[in-house]
Image (tube, rainbow, N blue to C red; front, side, top):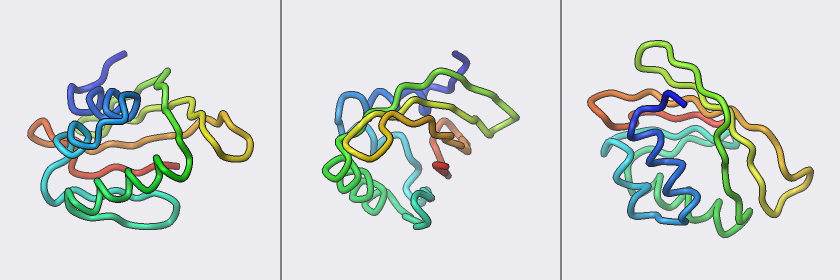
Amino acid sequence: MDMPESVKAYFDADKGKDPDLLAKVFSPEAVVHDEGKRHQGSSAIRKWWLVAKAKYDHVAEPFETERNGDEISVRAKVSGQFPNSPVTLNYVFLVKGGKVVEMGVK
């Protein structure tokens, strides 16, 4: 799959349950949009991810990507402790300078 290293590292961190690697993927002022909430900055993103991992014990397995300039869309099968697991979610990453500056999950 055609993914920038930072996007690949996001999914590697998710699979390995590694919050330190995950934090390095994002720029210091990055923004994540998930479940109708906005999380900005490395520490807020790290906290969002840790809370979600504890709540859902999920893992995302990417299976399709599409690139449009700096925007990378990734479809992933997400399995975990939530109703209707597994589901397919769409992740949209905006990557600048090798770091994720914005990410949305739908």
